[in-house]
Image (cartoon, rainbow, N blue to C red; front, side, top):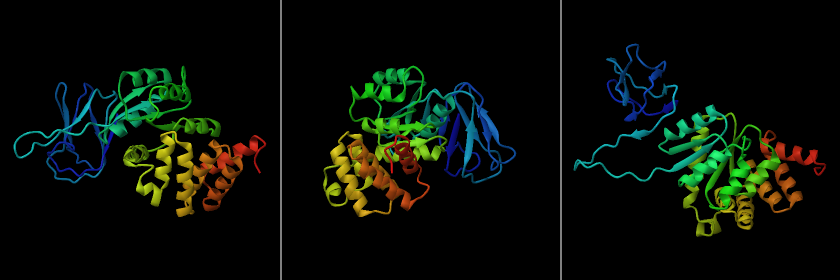
Length: 303
């Protein structure tokens, strides 16, 4: 496993209050640690401490070979001596047939204080989904037994609005369009960094507070409003909001490309191509736009 932390720490203190429950040995790897760094390990509770030298550590990595059973962040008591009740942790399901991807995503999100479960294929992911409530699903598209699209179709029979993010190394436009038609509004290409995952998850979950019919959406719509509407499978509203967001900021290639996706889903292929061409004028290396236009040309429908 890998934990990344950006909190400073002084010698002789616990690492950011993390108590890591493992039976495996924890190894600390960092050029910033002093030479007398030591491991303090109990039977089921391990903490990491630094030796005599007082150092400020900005980044460190704790590694082990096994998956975590649970990770709990220590909470400081209030002045009354009572431990305050914490808000419910957001629950996330990660579905990918590559173990290293599952663990990378899981540990990145646990470090950000999310509760994370994993599954190795779509069938296992569907089983996990039925066992408990999740706020978000991150899923690969190409998996054995049941792929991501098949799993998402099944999930939509029971939950129309659960947020979903595609994580894939083999992005094809036809599968991406199918995923977007099922309420997916975001994707991450492999390879990616832990920060990429955390930022994407933060952004998607923060959209829950947006009202796609509220005053802000009416007076100053953004691309986030349009993505929220698509996640709610309201394509007409998503298209309307995306058009108005692009009109407010026509220099954003991502906005142009997202509008192109919505136009394609709405059956207006000519308008979609125009939007993707606009995105390429703003950013000649814009990958989604290049992929879409090449895909259209390969089908004999592009100009």
